[in-house]
Length: 291
Ligand SMILES: Nc1nc2c(ncn2[C@@H]2O[C@H](COP(=O)(O)OP(=O)(O)OP(=O)(O)O)[C@@H](O)[C@H]2O)c(=O)[nH]1
Ligand SMILES: [Mg+2]
Image 1: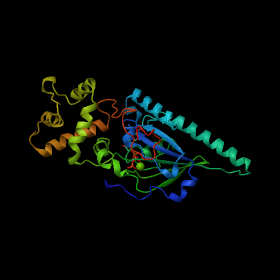
Image 2: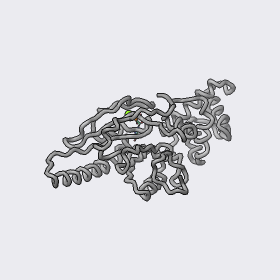
Image 3: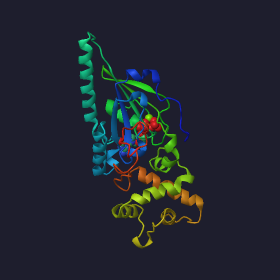
C-alpha cells in the first residue's frame, strides 16, 4: 500500500444515494487520527469506536460523548471480543423498520437497508463485518491493505453490507499524522518515522504502563532506561543481547516495540483524548474554534 493520498474512490460514487448507513470505523485508541468521512455520505454517519478492548474505557466513553454532543450516532465495539455488536444490530433493525414503514406508505413491499463500512487501513472494517454477519466472508489480516476492492454481502434477507479498502486521504494532515499511523499499523514500518512514533508513544505512557512494559520485556529495574526514544530502543536491544550501536538492531527493537503495542501487550492505552486531539476530517462538524 502506498503512503500517498489516493484519489481512487473506495466505492462507486454513483451508489452513494442508495446507501442508508455509512459505518465509519475509528480506532478507539486514536479516534482523531483515524476519523475519515465521505462528503457523499453526509448525514448517514454511524461512528464506531472499535478495538475498545485495547483502549482505556473512560477515555473511550469521553470520546463517545464528544461525538454524540456533535450530533453523531456513536457506538463502542470490539469485533474480536464481540462487544457492542448487538447495539449495532439493534440500530440497523430500527433503521430498517423505519425504512420499511416509509416504503409501505408508498405501496412498496420489498425494502433493503444498505450499509457500507469505511475507515483508514487496518482499523478493522472487514473483521467488524465478519463479526456482524457471524461468518468469515471478508478477508482480514494484521497489516494494512488487505481489502483491495469493494465487496457486497447480504445479511439476512433485507440488509446488504459493503466492505471497502482502507483510505488515508487527507493531504493536509498526511505528514503530521504519519508517525501516529505507523504506531497504529495503518502504514507499513518506515525507519524514517521511528523517532517520532516512539516519542509519541513515550509521551503518553503513565508510570504504571512503563512498569508493565518493563516487566513484559523482563528488564531489571536498575537497567531500565527510557528518557528518550533512542535510550528506550537501546535498552530493548541490549535486553536481547544485541548491539546497541547498530542501526539495524535499533530498527529491530523498534519494530518489536510497535508490534507489542499494537497487540495490546502493555495493557489498555489511549493515544488521544477527546477535546484535545484535532480531528483529521475537513467534513467533521466541529466548532470554528477547534477547526
Ligand atoms: N483487538 C482487536 N483487534 C481487531 C479488532 N478489529 C480488527 N482487529 C484486528 O485488526 C487487524 C486488521 O483487521 P481488518 O479487518 O483486516 O482491517 P481492515 O480495516 O479491513 O483493513 P484493510 O482491508 O487493510 O483496510 C486484524 O489483525 C484484526 O484481527 C478489534 O475490534 N479488536
Ligand atoms: Mg479489510
